[in-house]
Length: 322
Image (cartoon, rainbow, N blue to C red):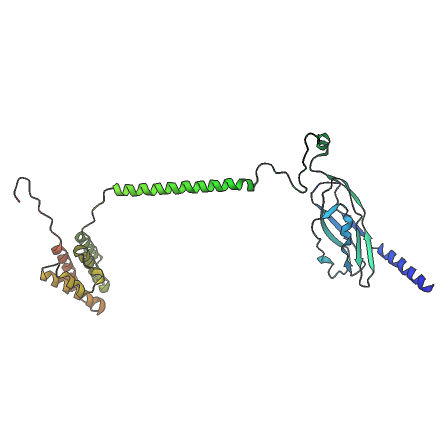
C-alpha cells in the first residue's frame, strides 16, 4: 500500500511539473494566402538544462514547417526564455487551426516537462478568389488552380527570352564578320589599285644618312665608337642595297671580298678598306683617332657612295642618232 501511494504521488508531481513550463506561439496572422510563408515565434522557458523533443512539430496541424529551426541556443542552456523562429505555410484553403503546440523538455534525470501554447485559427485564402470560384461553371469550362507557393508570371521569363537573345547575338556576330571581311577585301583592292611609289634608291638614303651623321657631331663630342658604328652601318646598308651583297651580316674581309667583282675600281675598294679598318680599330681596339681622321673617314664615305652611284641614262633628242 505504501509503494502504491508513493507511485501515485510521483505521477501527480510529474503531471504538475509538466504543466509548469510556460509556452507561447506568436506571429500567426489572421489570414494567409495559400503557399505564402509566415514567421512564427515559439517561446518557452525550460525549468533547467535539458533536451527539446521534436514531437511539437506534429501539432502544427495542416501547417507545414519549411525549414528546421535554429536550436543552437539550446546548447549549454543556463536559464531564461528560449525563442525559436519558425517558418511555416499551408497548402489547404479555408479556416485552418494552428496549434495548440505542445513543447516537451526532457531534464537530465529523465523526466519530461511539457508546455502548451494557445491555438489559433488562420483563414487560408486560395490562389483563385472564392467569388470567382462560386461563379465558375466547372461543368462547361473546368478551371485550373495555380500550383501552391507559385506566383503567376506576367509576360515572358528569362528562359523564354534566352533563345531569342542567343539568336540576336549570333546574327550580330555574323553581320560583324561579314562587314569586316568585305571591308578588308575593299582595302586590299584599293591598295592594289593605288599607284605604288618606287623605292628610294640606296644612294639617296645613304647621302641623307651621312648628312644626318655629320650634323650630329658625334666625334667632335668624343663619342668615337658610336660615330664609327653608325658610319659603317650606313655604308653597309648602302652596299647591300646597291650591290645585293649581305654586307650587314659579313665581316669587313668578307664584304671586301664579295665587293671585288662588283666594283672594278681598285682605288674605291682600297678607300672603303681603309675606312672599315679605322672603324674596327675604334670600335674593337679602343683606338682614339683624332678629329682629322674622323673627318677624312666621313669624306671617304661620301666619295664611295657618289662614285658607285649608277649613272642615269642619257636621253637622246628625237630625230638625232644615238
